[in-house]
Length: 330
Ligand code: MN
Image (cartoon, rainbow, N blue to C red):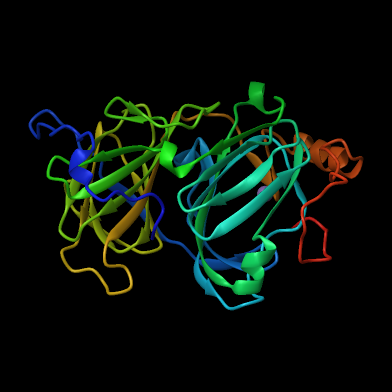
């Protein structure tokens, strides 16, 4: 897993050592194993939030782990043009390359550790696909797409696009140097990441050496979700086991504890986890396909607006795309 790595973590700022007598560790209270499926034109995903009620995910809606997959030449896949309204998509690329273009003029290429942050707001059309040279060559593909909800008063805000380079992530390490923490948005122990968010959240990608442990101060008014991208872990002071493709929803407290098992597999020699937390929006969630609103009537309106072309139009100068199928996913 390349993402962003450093030669010597000991030059990085260190996380504080927490006092166990005054720290309230958050414990895993629900653990799910993500089922596998396919997205877009058929790229393999793990549905990391499957079966978890929205009120426990709030302010998050959906998380796909895309890959990890080693494509043969001609095999890499993306999505056709499709709409969104009412939330933000955050795409974090660990390995491989994804191109993006949207009807608001946003677009670019993300690779090893880059994040693309798209606020759909009132409406947008976009496409996410591997570049032609990668389709030709094949290769490794691994990333995440997280959906962050917007409160009702921001659902119809103007679309926005942020391109966050991997090297812009705030890098931290554990007091003993056993972990690399990449803060992408929000803050950890006073160290802010580069992502600008409508809804207050913190997201970070952690890599732990076998046997390492990390304690993270975590805002008690945020929820806390830990997803294992690869490896074997134990979370909380009660050391609940968690492995590749599992999500732990944590209970209340003011810190997270994540430990990497001393024994890891040869395919995932280190532990990689993605951590998410945010201030719950506490509004009704009406979610269907590519739209996340508050009521069914607003979903119907979103479909009508899409059909009428009011969520945007596919740009005339559109990026090359391997599929003739331009129908949106159901
Ligand atoms: Mn999309």
